[in-house]
Length: 231
Image (cartoon, rainbow, N blue to C red; front, side, top):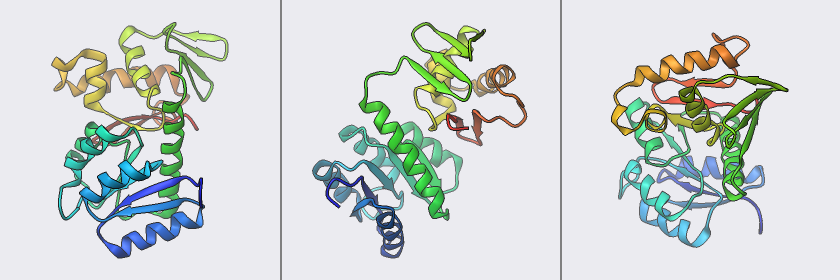
């Protein structure tokens, strides 16, 4: 398994850990594990995993408090896997630095898909900064501040561009509403969630073939939005 992509599973329930480990190892991943927060920090320092799967219900520290600590040690993608269904917990985890959030129970294929997305994100972070991002028929020029569909320019307002660029810099990841508000309008407008809905509606009218069934600008209910690049 030397050289295999490594996944750190932070989970104190041995039965769940065993299921996750077996499923990942069958797919060729190298699994390391931790049963509490302190072990997780040590594994990040010594093992440098490629992806972290983090349960929130740990015996020594709440997972929500652990996310920013892990983030201070590594840029490795963090996928929260938790039975907590409240939107508030999901938003806190994402705002604290998690890249994705899966609510238990979920299927193994869905977990594997989220890991693949996280690995693509890690590869992009490790490469030179991207100035052009493509999704579907579109090409977004972050430097020239232009959007093209094939060879035809799509006119965006300054705010629409800021929103789309914020999503494009984290492709296929959930970007919380508070992050979008901060990037597009500034930290003084954190309570104006309606702003995001209005402008995302406008962006969908310009980008989606069927705005009522968006393929690229996908709403994650109660959390924010995701720019799907593989649709």
